[in-house]
Each structure stands twice: as C-alpha cells, then as structure tokens.
Image (cartoon, rainbow, N blue to C red; front, side, top):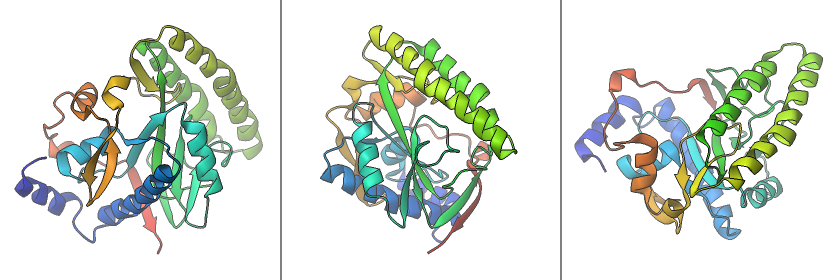
Length: 270
C-alpha cells in the first residue's frame, strides 16, 4: 500500500467523508458485500478486477477518485451467477442484461442499485430501464488473439452502440435489436470458437467488451483475499503479475491534475 500520509491527502482531495463521491463509493461497497455473500453461499468464484483490484492493493480500498466497481469471473461460472442474481432480485438490486433491459446491449452484465440514478458521460444509458449505481460484471474466456478481441470491441462500439442513440423508439428497437442478435448470437460465438481453438494460457473479456489486455489463469487461482474498505474480498492469487500486465508499474501514482471520473450526475436515495 502507499504511504498512509499520502493516502490521507488523497482522501481529503478526492473522496472526503460526506462528499458525493464517497457516498457513491459506500453505496457500491454495500452492493459488493451483498454480491460477495451470495457468491459464497452459491460457491461461485469471482474476484475484484482492474481498477478495483488496484485499489485494494495500492489503497486498501477504492482508488480515491474511482467511481465504479469491477469484478470478473470465468465464462463457465457466469450462467450460474446470472441465475443467482435473477432469482435474488429485490426492491434494492437488479441484474441488468439485455434479457432484463431490452435497451441494454453490452455483452457483460451490471448489478444495479434501484435507489439511485446516474448519468454516464457517453450517453449509452439514455434509454436504459435501470440507471442506478452499478457494479460491472466482466466475463472472461480463453482467447489467444489480441487482434480479434480488438476487432470485436470495435464492432460493438461502431455498430451496436450508435444505434442505441436513435431517438425514434420503433426504429431504434428494430435496428439495435437486429444488430444485437447478429453480433451476440452469430459473430461473437464464431469469434469465440476461433480464439478458443487457438487458445494459450491467456484469457480475455468476452467478445464485444472492448478490453484486450490478457489475464492468465495461473495468476487467478487459487483466489486469495485482500482487505478492501474494512472488508475482505477475493483478488487474483498472483495479483502482482495480474496488475503489472494491465498497468505496468501499478504502484506509481498518475498525474493527479489529469484525473477525471466517468459519471456526470449521481442521485442517491435512502
């Protein structure tokens, strides 16, 4: 972890107690604790990923300016997770996929808080059914080809997401759902079959996710636990190599003047 004095200075600058960002982070923490409990009860492996894992290692919790939570799991475990979340939907939590929200077209799911509203800067959420504070649930599978992963991400960004901004509901529904079917039911499965046959120890986010840096099975398991905001959550066993692959010198602090968050507006209800 970084020096406690620096950590205190960062907290004061970015996410001081009582600030909107800190309230947002604490809402996500409660959601994460719920997910962790349910995954333990159902023996579904998952781990803190990307910037959330970095926050655990470098800060002992959220990166002070971070406004989202990322978790990952294997593609083979995702159907059980999806079933579990759908069965445990309640007045506070919803699991957002295209099945539960026809206007949502990302290939990965989001766990949504139903007592809040956020607006993302990219406007992809304009017509979403669920727009509350969220946790991204990224799914990884064997993939040796960085090029194909990049191509599939480009398809999602250039072919699918622009259609979701069409204002006419009927035209949007026909065009966006047609493209979703072509990509998710035809193109992405074909790409997965190609990359899996050529697989190496590398894993990547499922096609269309837009992230191409690899993960390694040997880095992930057996999962270990690390303190995060006074709790304990699973992280990759070899988190040093996992984070180095993603960020290089992950303990080096970024230039603070260039830091910005993803969201433009957050409304939290009790």
